[in-house]
Image (cartoon, rainbow, N blue to C red):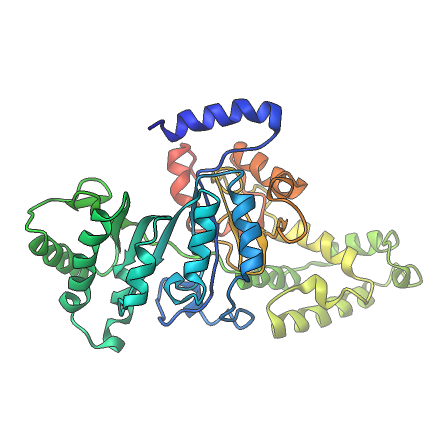
Length: 395
């Protein structure tokens, strides 16, 4: 089977003619419903009031799968939520199969119901990821031993790999809950009757069954960007206000043209109001004042105060080798952007190729090529830091 690098070189050559990139993986969210509260997931961070348990409509998923199939062979049916709880999971997998897409599923998988087993044996599934760390985060509430959780999964894993060309991973954060991690390795080692040591990020248990370790990271949250915007207002100096005042005269807003452009107090008062509104909502400062003639000035302040003088050096594969499609059709550069903070477009309105060739997507990719995170969310992302070493970039 050709390597990803070889396939990419072929597709990139073809891309000269057909203008289509080739992606390693595309994340398609099918549900935001989840029965667990994991301390490493943003759904437990108290900042998801606007997110519900919605599922991707089948018609929208059909579009998503069809568009994804033009750019990749693999999809992951997860951004937030537990795919095994999706009412239409069988239909989603059928659509994947129709579009010749191989899917991966990530779930705590407790309890492992007959319905879940049937779904996980679907021919479209290439990889099953059991989140053992997700179980650990909820174990006290579930009141079940680690062995009783793992044994049904271990038994099913043997069936899953025997009935199809698929892989099964037991996922663990390798830098947290070390005692639990050791317990998992011992229980699974005993079950599969193997004595093995961790090699790199994996511990092989059986053919196509392994423990997969990864480093925990801090999710980049939209409210953290808002906090930085609010902080920018509180640290404004008199010179900042003077500069803004001078630009105030050139605002395109009709309501702004008639104001006294040399009255710094007027502008300061407007920003004070904006600051209160932002504190109340945590989101969309520009939206809060869209109708009061200050959108132009806010853009100036955000550009000056929020974007660092020297943007943090960074590298990421977002929008180049991966992207995500949320349950409402919004396309984001990666699966970390669960809220659509970097909304590149919507597949209900444009093709995925068009969206990934948008000016914003191009700017993000070009920035990473230079080692620069141009998007505020990327600047505070804990996940992208792992790529800095790969690209020999240091903050």
